[in-house]
Amino acid sequence: MNFATPESRATTSVNWRLGLVSIAGLWAFYFVIITGRAALVSPGAHLEMLVYRTIVTGFAIGITFLLFIFLERFADRPLRWRIPIAFAAAVPVAAAIAGFNLYIFEVADPMNVFEREEWQEVLQQWQESRVRDPWASLKEFFEASMSRYFVVIAWTLLYMALGYAQIVRRAERRAAIFAQEAQTAQLRALRYQVNPHFLFNTLNVLSTLVMRDRREEAEKMILNLSTFYRTSLTAEPADDVALAEEIRLQRLYLDIETVRFPERLIIDISVPTVLASACVPAMILQPLVENAIKYGVSRVRRPVTVSIHAEEQDGKLVLRVADDGEPMQQEDAPHGTGVGLTNVRDRLEARYGDESSVIWGPIDGGGFEVVLTLPINRESC
Image 1 (cartoon, rainbow, N blue to C red):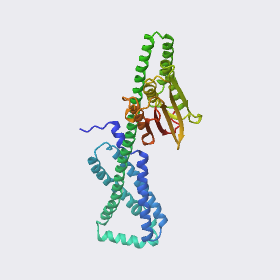
Image 2 (spheres, rainbow, N blue to C red):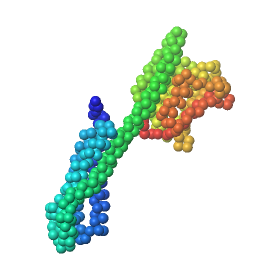
Image 3 (cartoon, rainbow, N blue to C red):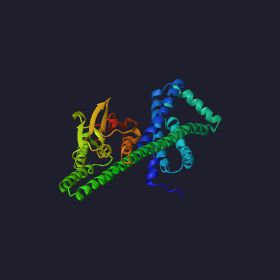
Image 4 (cartoon, one colour):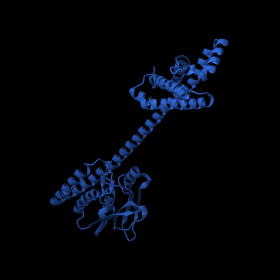
């Protein structure tokens, strides 16, 4: 047995406004066609006939709307049921419209059109045809019903097409929502990969400082670490932040690393004021700065400069993170273990698609550079 849930019914129904507009539009089109034909083939009294047709058209719109309400009761049924029901229900509707049309024009004649001299010959021919053929009235009614039946059927097919068009639109909206939710989930997962990795490295440094009884440095690192995490974890992982805020977080991180490398780490940050408000994915620079420390600073005994530069090129935001550490070959470049360059690339691809890029490689004379290119956006953060 087929039970319909409220959700399934909502996704297969046509809203009343759309149903009424489609009914009125179809009958208005029929009205125009019939009126045009009558103007070409019928004599006189066009104004009165126009009034009659308007009355009949109004009746047709009303009773077709009742058919719409009836068909909505079966909106949750399979198409193999809805089509026969619609075709069967259209029969009495078409008969009612045809009967009302004959009544207005030939029986009631509220404006006495057929009593006028110009219509006497037509009326006489009509009466003589009834005498010659007693079934003429029934045949005329059947023919009128058939002509209206095809109009009603045309509307029912339009009605079902509109219903399934709404299903398609709702499905497209749901697919877009699911895609957005999947993208958000992916961004969250990628973002959450960064924090544990950074935390483990920092705890290792703290452990070393404590073991070496460097309490003041350990205390400073703990305070910086607390500030870093309090700031970075307040924002939604999939949200963007202003570039100025991202740079502030990286300064906190570099302050922590300065405790570890007080003589070897030199910081060079350059961000134009006009780009400070540009939006970037939160902590997008973190893995890059961390790699610069890991592969550039920690492996040498001399001072190494870690630089973060921002600029605008061709309407895009370009971020560069580089170090001037020891020379390395492209095959020796740090590819990370799920939290490094791969993490950054995947986050940008999920967030911007083909509008972003990540390029990395060794620098002539020593060191390594990563260049991020992404759209300039100041509205999402």
